[in-house]
Image 1 (cartoon, rainbow, N blue to C red):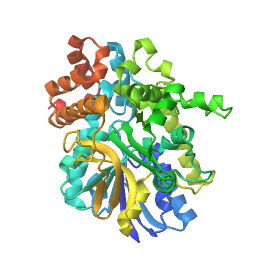
Image 2 (cartoon, one colour; image 1 turned 180 degrees about the vertical axis):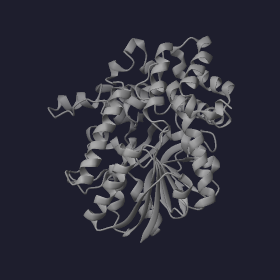
Image 3 (cartoon, one colour; image 1 turned 90 degrees about the vertical axis):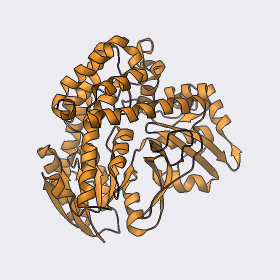
Image 4 (tube, rainbow, N blue to C red; image 1 turned 30 degrees about the vertical axis):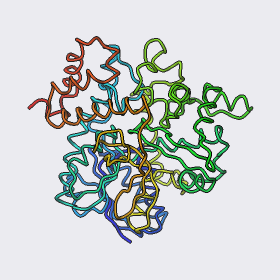
Length: 465
């Protein structure tokens, strides 16, 4: 089988080395064409050279093209992968650092909060343009999006889509085994990949569960083990332990080294103690939804062991990954041919073969989360095949969890409209409604909005027409 895969953001060295390795591990594919589009020429060229090494290592026959014209790259594509970031690190630094002057300090700036809204403004119009091009140049193709802010980007793509099939993908759910092992004794067997664990092994053990919410704010809302409701057991575990690390230390078991990306789960456990349900995204994302978990009194998340992911650390990470890509391309480093655990290629396999696969997806709400507005992007379990996405009907998000998710869904809808229309007034309203704005003085929010717009002006033409 041969396909045309177009990657918008093909120089994204943080993503491409694993996602493309997974593509080359698809036995169903013998080759085709991989088209890479990215303004960062040195990065995208390094990725192209790495893919040439993959061709040789896996005996595949993919033509590798680096293209400047996005429309040319989209023509006739079967799959489009989006992993783009307009302006990359320069505007991202503005998103994260300018709000600090106004009392708003968040650790990640990928989803919600004033920094997340700012990032969305320059990403949303590009998402709309990509789908408009796809509707004309590769109608009926599949768009697999990993670009953040996930909810608003995927929402924009679906607004523009008529024939294009859109799936938003996030891997935060893949930390599930870190908690189900200690809490319920459902340890992932050695050597088992995460997708087998989540979608086959857990059901084989009699574990039936429901996951629902919005991106980076997903919750375990139902959990039964051999018919027993185990949510009370999970709540009791969180009541008795401050974090999963505390439990492991008490057991004399090793604890992974703390980092920007691997948190101890202290915020997750605190939320479970308070609301009775376990959130599943990483703490660094979760605390951006709750100002009470990220403010001056708790060291902006430090008391929950959440460390800010600085722009400089992201730049250094990109440099390291670029070096890795170049080393693989030059044969200085051998690549391990094992699957990354990302869900993209399993979804591709299901579409190509017609055999459905379970997945965690971001998709428009068609009733799968019954107390969130219709059409807003929600994240739930689903079955994906060549026929489309069939989300799992997941019921209500309970209590205060549903209330906060509805608020953020409303803010996201306002943000999408503000970005598409270049509407300053609507932008200020969205920022004023976002819980993170509590760190600023209310009268300063219009000034903050203008400062962010001015700083990122070159990526925001709709606001300066």
